[in-house]
Length: 93
Image 1: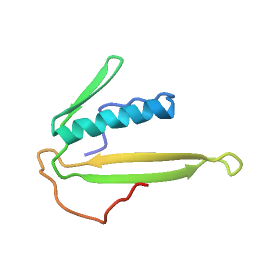
Image 2 (image 1 turned 30 degrees about the horizontal axis):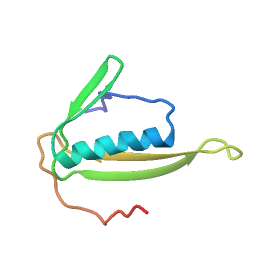
Image 3 (image 1 turned 30 degrees about the vertical axis):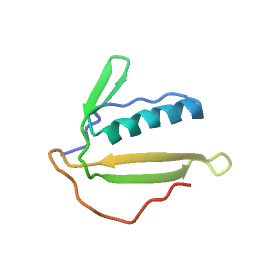
């Protein structure tokens, strides 16, 4: 099945605002319930598996004189799957 984008939001935010969003996501995940996202008229509710794949990726792209960096956090699971163990431990300092 090809990739289907169910929800997307992109906007300029301060570091503090981004941290607030990430805290809200972390609190929802920790509570074990569904996670609802809304931007304008678009919304989606997801329920990640108890054990999911967590990917962190840092990229650099663009022209050599002004490269752009990005960090992506991805939580991936199969719908209806409880998840499984894998990979090494991620450390954030």
